Length: 340
Image (cartoon, one colour):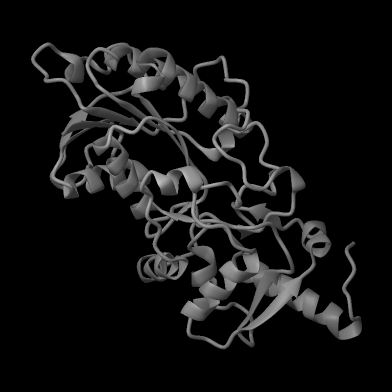
């Protein structure tokens, strides 16, 4: 099959391109950069320009079996879908579970309401991400029709190369505790967590193309309590670290962020408005051939590759030591530390 990847130079797009090549398909990556997987053809273009798709829609270019798009900018997807509608059989759009209007419930499936699509071509703030993804889905369907459009809504993507730090932080933290007695600070509670390995996601996207499957699919791993996820990460470290648990109110009072980002405890979710982000239904995806490796394998492979630094998320060593010292001192003088 002839597959056009709009991108292919970053983490997810590159993984999908590599998976398609592994299956013996002909892959072309259209991107501003040229660092595409070995074996893929590279065509350079800036998707913000009017003629970005001329090189892949010329009369001399054979029809594409599928186009894969991972953009979060509605204007880019609108222009791509319009330009390629007569030149490709299938449009596969990598959306996000953030496209759902609410993530408060457990077991959200593909029929749940989406955000009102963003009217603008570009997001102006991260708060518009869900609406932007909904607009991108709408654009793909408008040009290709529901019978030729596949929408993938991933939840938390993890595995080797996770640049967000969400799935690399905990195995790396347990492997390299910052506390003087090798203590590790963990949240006392949190919403459920699910992780889909980027390699499993990529292989499944290629399978959907091969089988001409269309429609919308949640692409998420199996849901489990946060404590169970942390137990897997801890076991991989082969250390006997002491886990020091901190109450939610105590962490919030000290401005420790949830989910991701600087000064955070990655994957920890305490906000009820997004409490279902780790518990979406993956029944439809599993029925469509999604195969999931174990969480232990994903975290182990992540630990082997990403041991140099904790990337983009979590507590620095200094931040964790400071919080540990305060919490342990409070625990020594009281059975239950109080929030400020």
